[in-house]
Image 1 (cartoon, helix red, strand yellow):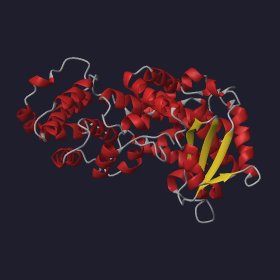
Image 2: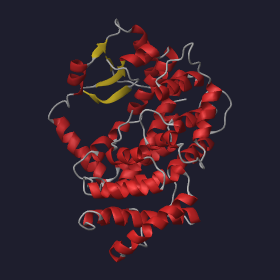
Image 3: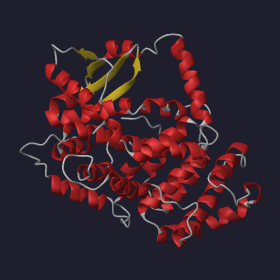
Image 4: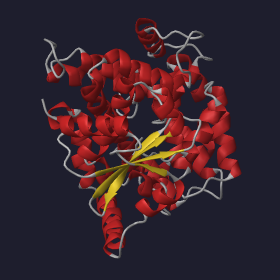
Length: 400
């Protein structure tokens, strides 16, 4: 089995699509021009702020890196670094001058077992093997010109599937579901298992199943909030890894990859309810609220700008003329549409809708106090945590 054979199909599909996107191409061209002028300074920064782990200083870590590199078919020389931090964290950086850099927090190196570190190491190296750095997601989302709404949503979707692929690479290296789940438990909780807290895989996976309940009650939003973030943990990733471990891609007689991809897509689909094109009463209620909310947000600051119209229109392939919408009537309809949507949707669906409205609010590059006030009113009516509004407005995704 090779690294490419275990890659998530939707990661590859979205990756290839994004590479052909005009904005992605333009940003990559800008990055290439900068690189032609000399190194981007990644190595210089790491040498100045972290400790380079030589093979004599950390032979065990280098042995793990070599094992993962062999399993994943990695050819590039590695440099490993450690930095001081109480938080469990790791990162893989885009290669520079023919070397690949992987960085670990001091607490992670001290608290994770060998198999747990193999998962983390394999995950980080997986990002390089799958060329995930070829999609400059951070540059695009933090750029002066906000990306089109459909591009932003595709980037968010791809980043989640990219994490699924990297997780598979890590699990492929570790070959131990218990250790993989234990590593994710530590990342999620910050707890090092000892006599005070005993890790139990079955109970942890049961918690994941509980988090995935579509009809979750209001007030249980903290776990679901992780669904819309790539850092540091998503319960959906644990579910996807368990499926991977039970598939034919791992040792043993499991179900075929085609079935695995369908199962994973079903799970990940919980994050992306298709209310824009759906024909159910729930989809209609969400769509009607999105239209009214988007117009109210866009109109909150000096009327609806051309940029905001473009963003709103990008959510709909056809069928809606933004110029013909009556902003005043839609503002008056907003309370009823909030109530109707709340009555028919799960918390996950409501959070997804709020995230989409935040994309509209960011259309002009910044968000006014009046626009945030409208967002907060809608979120309050939908019983979505206000902190989620702040996170969605400020979110810039980087691969972890």
